[in-house]
Figure 1: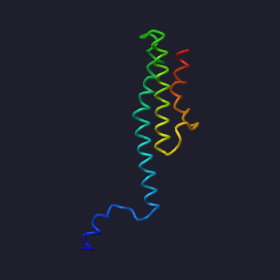
Figure 2 (figure 1 turned 90 degrees about the horizontal axis):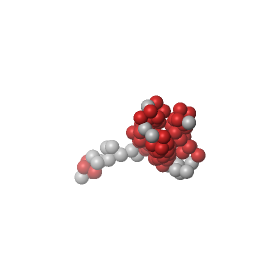
Figure 3 (figure 1 turned 90 degrees about the vertical axis):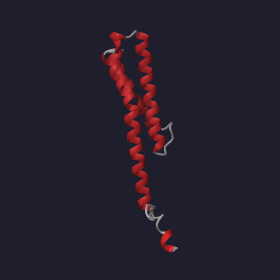
Figure 4 (figure 1 turned 30 degrees about the vertical axis):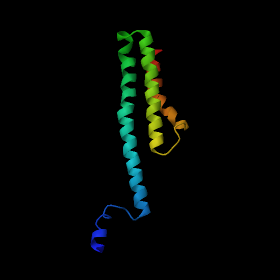
Length: 108
């Protein structure tokens, strides 16, 4: 009976430092995933409105996409902060506005 009880515990960590390390790795992987997947939308929108959006779209549409770039950037940075157990209103959330600021140079 005692041999059977040890079989389920093979993958559990008994060392607190090892579980902290695993938690850190999981948070980093999820942060990178969120940054690439959601942040890519903000980056692509910023590149589009900076390069070809002004000739293809009306001025109000360009401004609307520019605002959406900022919103997506803020959502991305807020989600990354929450995954890393920070408050979403931390000053680092403003880093999400970088694609919007970069696109503003070519739009205005």
